[in-house]
Image 1: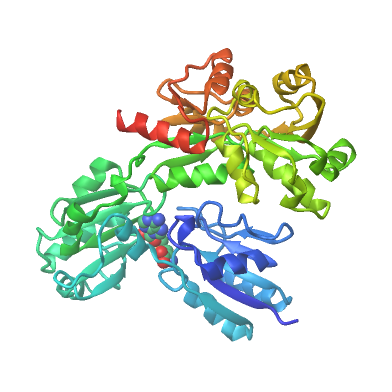
Image 2 (image 1 turned 180 degrees about the horizontal axis):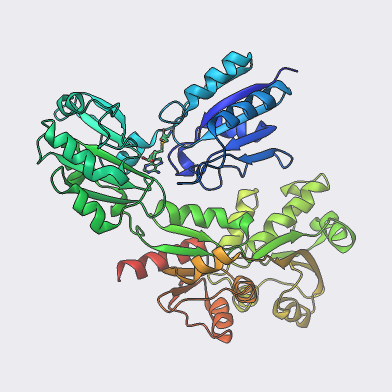
Length: 498
Ligand code: SAH
C-alpha cells in the first residue's frame, strides 16, 4: 500500500483547540513526528504501537535539521506508512510545512495538509483581542519577528510594515522586541500605537502585557516574558480592556491538583479547567477491575434474586453494571431489588445506566447509608454489597446484625500509581490539592506527595478529611455535599473569599 504523510496543525496549545481531523489521524497513524510546541496530551490518542519521533528544535541546539526531517518523512512515506507530521499551530504558518510538502511532492509521496488554529489568532483571542475589527483594523499581517532587526539586509521591509493599514502579528519576536519596536517607530509607525504581547497563549499560565510601541520593550522585560509569545501591534490591542475574558474566570491563575485515578480524573479536571484553573493531574491511584468470575460472576448472574443491592462507590456502580452487561443482561436484571447508592455521585452513575436508586443518603458515608436503610426490610433476605476490595465492613456488618443474608463482592482493586518528580514538584507548589476519597489521600501520601505551606487542602467529606488529618495534613476546605459538584462548589467559595 502506498504511504501518505499528513502535515497536521495541532493548534496553539489548548488541547480543546485541536481539530477533529487531527485527532482522527493521530489515532490511526503508524508514525508521528512531532515538535516541542504541541498541546499537552496531544499524543494520548496515538496507537500503542505507533512510532513516536520527537523532531523538535530546542532553542539553541537543533535536534534534527530540516533536511533530515524531510528525508525521514519521505522515507517513512515511501515505506507505505501513514505518517502524521504534527506541528504547533498551523503547519503552513511559519511552520516550515511548505518546505516539507515540497520535499514530499519532489519524492512523489502523497500528502494531505490539515490546517490548525494558528497562535497569531488564538493567543490574541484568548487575551481578548480580535485581530480585525470593523472600526479598528481591516487587515492583518502575519510577520516573522525571528530576524534580527539590526541586520542591514533584513528581509523585512520595515517601511512597508510601518505603513501597513492594519494589525501586525509578529511570531517568534519577543527576543527582538526592542529592535522591532524601534524599527517600526523609525519607519513611521506612531510611537503611541498599542501593543500586546501574549505569552503561552491558550495554555495554563497565559500572560498578557499591554503597552505602546515606545515602552513595550521595557514592560516585556519587567514582566520577564519569554517565548513562546505573540506580539501584536495595532489599535485592536486596546480592546482587551473591555474584552479580556479568560482572566475573569473564577479560578484563573490558580493551580489545582487532582489526585483521582486517571480514568475518573478527567471529569473533575475538565470542570476545573473550564473554571480557569491550571490543573495538575497526579493520579496516585489506579482502579483495576476484577474479572467477572467466581463470586462476582455468581452475584451478577443472580442480581434479580437480591432483595437489596447496595452500590458503595461510583466506580462500584459502573463496574457492577458492566459485570451484568458482560453476562448479556441489562438494567431489567435488577427488577424486584431495592437499589441503594451510598451518595449522589454513585446514584448518578446508576442513573446514567438506567437505574434510579431507591435509597440515596445525602452524605456519602457508610454511616449515612446504614441509617437510610433502617426502614428497608432485610430480615431473612438476600442482600448484595458491591464495593472495592478494600473497604470498611460497617455496612455488611450492620445488615447482618439485622438478620440479612449478605453477599459482599469486590469489583475492583485500587493500586498505587507512581508519580514522577515533575508531578510531585508541581503538586507541592500548587494553590489547591483536592482529595475525593480516603484512598486518594493515602496513595498520594505513599507516592511521596507533599502539600506545600501555601497549598490549601480540599476534601470531599468527613471520612476523607479524617484520613488526611491522620496523615498530618491540615484540611482547609471540606465539601458540604460529598460529591464532585459539592467539592467544586466548596473550592470556588474558598477561592472567591481569598
Ligand atoms: N505554526 C505555528 C507557528 C510556529 S512559529 C502557528 O501557526 O502558530 C513559533 C512561534 O509561534 C513562537 O515563537 C510564538 O511566536 C508563536 N506561538 C506558538 N505557540 C504559541 C502560544 N501558545 N502562545 C503564543 N505564541 C505562540
